[in-house]
Image (cartoon, rainbow, N blue to C red; front, side, top):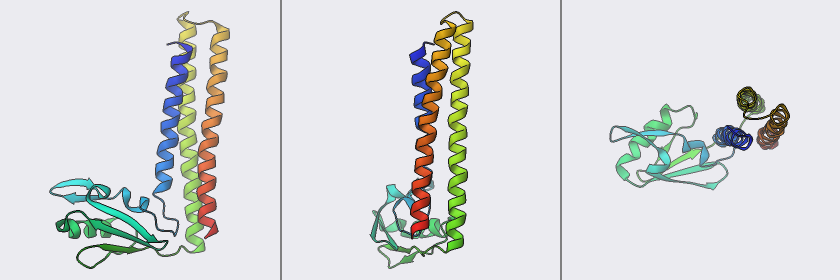
Length: 186
């Protein structure tokens, strides 16, 4: 592999690690209603688990409420069942056409637990990024052993990977800080 190929591969994988972390943060309950809270739910629909966002329109008319309007009225009961069996801790109110979810405000203790969870998840994302750095460094070592590049090129490659690692770790930390701030403000 060339210097550019190794860096490109590492960058793509690091971007994916940050993206997974970003998606995880979107689904966290912050005391404010957002469609992302229920995006990950899977509903048994004609025998197969289907993402809720494919079965219904999800909206937030105010900061404390999520409204789920199924495209097919027949799926209403299955959606309710999926919400009840999920770990959301919210009970659905249905009028036969739409489902309303009231998002309760978080207590101070819940906020602290959520902040700790975010910190732990951020650390997991950083570990994933560091593992990618390790793999890229191994590729540089191997390329040098195979006489595909010089020692200087290998060292330059490792420096570039370290710079990349630092920037992606900073991105993950920035996302975590922003989400923690959002949770603690309310």
